[in-house]
Image (cartoon, rainbow, N blue to C red):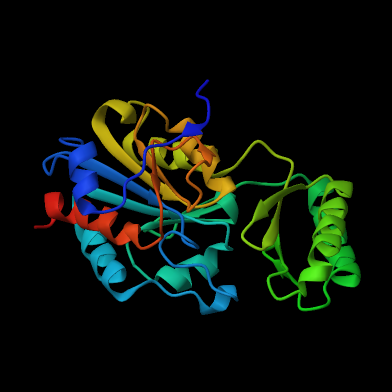
Length: 273
C-alpha cells in the first residue's frame, strides 16, 4: 500500500516539462480525470458563484475534443450541478464523489444505496437543517451525499456548529470529511472518488487499461486523495495545496489553483499544438 508523503512541487509549465519528460505521447491514449471545485475553478464563497478561469476553460474545451484524450470530471457536487458548471458535451461526469456517473451517450451508473442508508440520509438532512442550518451556515442536499457549508458563519460559532454537524452525520452512520469551510458527509459504502476513477477507466479502456493508457488526475481536497492513492504507480496525480508540508498520495503538489492552467497547457502542447 502506498503511503502519504510530502510531494515535490510543480509551480509552472516549465516544471511539468522538466519533471515529467516523455510521460505524455501525442500518439497514445490519455485519460484526464479532474475534480471541479478548487481544481478547475477557484473556491468561491458560494458554490453557485464558482467559475473556471477563461484561459483554463478554453484549453479544457480543446483537450476534450481531441480523439486520443478521454476527459472525466469527478466532483463532490451533484451530477447535474457539475454538468452545468463545466458544460462540455461528450465527456464523462461523476457526481457525489462518484456515486452518480453519466457517460457521453447518456447512459449512467448509479451506486444503489441500501434502503436503511437512504432512510438515515433523509433523517440526517432533516436534523441538520433543524439544528445547524443557522448563522449563515446551510445544508446542500445532493440526494445521496451532502455538504454542510459554514464559510459565512461568524468565527466564534464555527467550531461549535461544524462539530455538532459532524456528530449528527456520524449518528446516522455517514462519514463526515473536512473540506474547505465545509463538512462533506458520504454514505458508509465502499465507494469514493478512487473506486469511481478505477471503474470509469475499466469501463472505457478495459481491464488492461494500465498498459494502454496514460492517466492524469488532479484534485485539491481530502476526498481526492482516494483517487490519488489508487492511481499511485498507474498514472500521475497532482494535489493542489498551499501547505508545503501537506501529506498526500499525489505524485506532485501544485501550490495554487492557477497552476492548473499550466497543467492543461502541458497536455495541449503535446496533443493539440
